[in-house]
Image 1 (cartoon, rainbow, N blue to C red):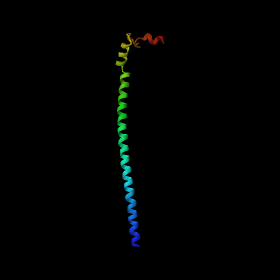
Image 2: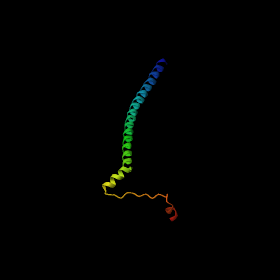
Image 3: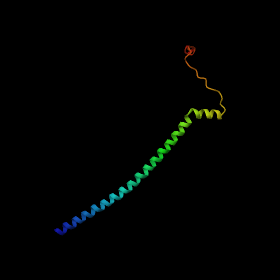
Image 4: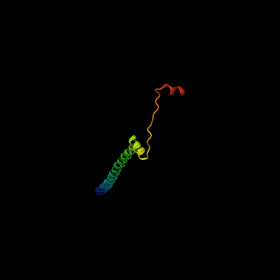
Length: 91
C-alpha cells in the first residue's frame, strides 16, 4: 500500500510540475505578445499625432493664405456685418 501511495504522489508531482512548466512557457509567450502590441500601439499613437498635426496645418488660415497666394488669388474677403439695419430690413 505504501508503495502504491508513493508512486501516486510522484505521479501527481510530475503532473503538477509539467503543468507549471507549461503555464510558465505560455506566460513568456504572452509577455512577448504584450510587448509587441505595446510597441505597435505606441507607433500608431505617434502616427496618429503626426496625421493630426498635418490636418491642423491644412485646416489653418495660414495654409489657406499661402495656397491663395500660390494660386494668385488676390481678392480680399469683405465680410458683411449686421450692424447696419438695412441688411436686416431687406430680408
